[in-house]
Length: 569
Image (cartoon, rainbow, N blue to C red; front, top):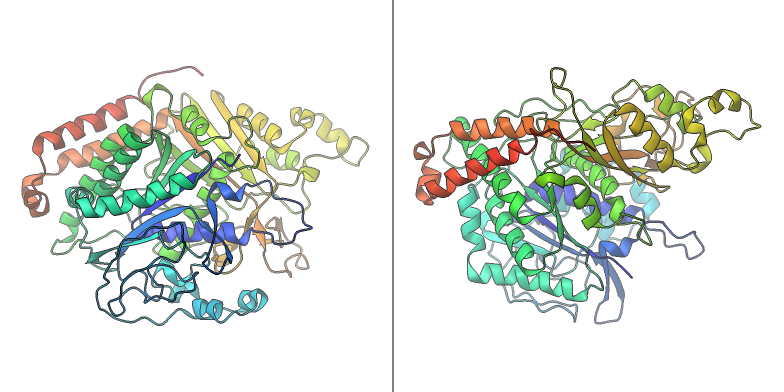
């Protein structure tokens, strides 16, 4: 039986990340009926349907929300179905759904600028062969203006939702404060429209595991998201994993200077974190910046990657690759032991510690001719996983981690390169290693982490399927490591092995719960407490309850203190 998960994307950067995520999944589909079935169960995140002409569709089980102007050329109902409706910003029209299972509300779209589709989208619409598209250089890094420019996946009509009263601007945000977002959620028509669409998705499921939510954690989407999560918790009571996202571009809010904008962002983040533990099973903040509470100047050094730290297109691909890898645990075919979303959240949220940290290795630093046992032997004294949660992994020398629980997922490491057969050359050296007794990738990594992390408990999930990196994935990211990469993403100095285009990469990602997480929470509490709300007109105008605010500050401190206690694994 399929164990479905509904995905929610709330905010512009969340949709940047989500678009890459769905693109990666679509690139991994194999339409050859004679091919070996994938060990990933794609129907966990996708739904099957059909148009009125009985044409089959396979679309993400997704509800996305963004501001006006972000769809550009893309119609509000998507462009998969036969009725080609007007895109965002075009002349007013009445929205009608084309999937008979959907019940859509009539909506009126405001008149605005008409956008020409990105060349990549134009080629997709023209039906160009995939090989032709793959060979073209679209210069996405410099030509992408919205996530819709590089979206390869096609969406169900009920997936796309736009807040028309707020227009998106890359320089000045209008949708600004936590109370502003919460107030929008409390509007009856707005709330009923979203909850009806969620209900329709849930009713289609055989055995829904729960929800995975991505949201922008610096503006009014914080308040809107908390309201929606509260509804999901009260109405369905299922497991819910949440990823607060921090855009690498620090937002400036309309009519506010840089210092005031930073304070607004800090308060929004603090209020979100204070409420998250009540309404979700687990949350893991993600960013490519080292610090995101007040200052956001320092990008993360990510081994093996070379990226523009201010590019939404490139940084979102990194976070999407993390999500595509770490979510494998609850998406494998057949459901392995502990392979449900509820099991993942339960493992990492002991003692009320609902916040986890994300770490990533991309691509996995293994040579093209190397066995995994030799690779791990070389990595034993090195930092394998790069943190991608704000405030973590910066300086832990004075207070080492006392305990760690982690869910590790690895993709694309072939079982046949685990170790050498007993009779092969070099096997005698490997047989002296403890890892030679391991018979699978997951078993060998389990042993590796138990040796390198003195006090730890690791759940390791492995799949042979690597991450595909076809258009429009930013392959230029992957030229930051030593030497070159073979077509399957392993390191090599052989120029002949680098001739074939890069098709996939092996990755490793993990969600971790450890005592180190008290540090970023303490830093956030300190920054929020420094802000004087009375001096920020935004919060005065929206009547933010000072008692509620003080309680949120106290709750943030309680959350931090939960990571101060010693515990044994």
